[in-house]
Length: 193
Image (tube, rainbow, N blue to C red; front, side, top):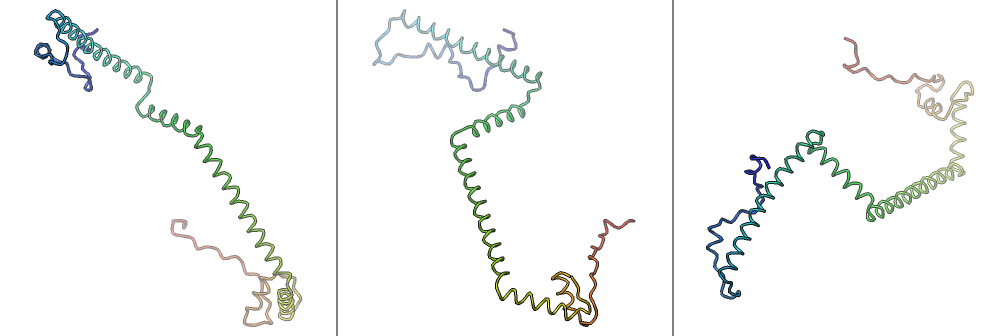
């Protein structure tokens, strides 16, 4: 292992208990009493395990650095990793049973709403058709047609809008010509400079 790596300690690692602290540990009276030789063996084993923990922490720090370098060389940034994690999580969500059931439920609800709106639209269309077929509406159409013929010096074949426009003029003897569509006034942005 490199010399620089030996000094690296992870901030979340367990702090090392010094040899002095190990030597000052006293055995509680409730535990079975160990001989001096057994205590010495346990102290040695404890020191070895603590040294292994420090070494493993250093190895882990070196491996984490190596991973970061490899990712940097491959162009894998933390943002890319986040995007991949979000994408993977979204895929897991969309393949979950709960999502599928909810999606199917919303789809059915949408289909039912579409059917309801179609039904309402059809009912309104039928109602308008029924109104057009009533004697009152037919009588109104006939009166408008009669008025149109009486107001125009020549019998025109204009549409209902033409009839209404012609009856709105002040002089009923003057025929109304179709007026051109109004053109919007150009804004300052559109005017040439």
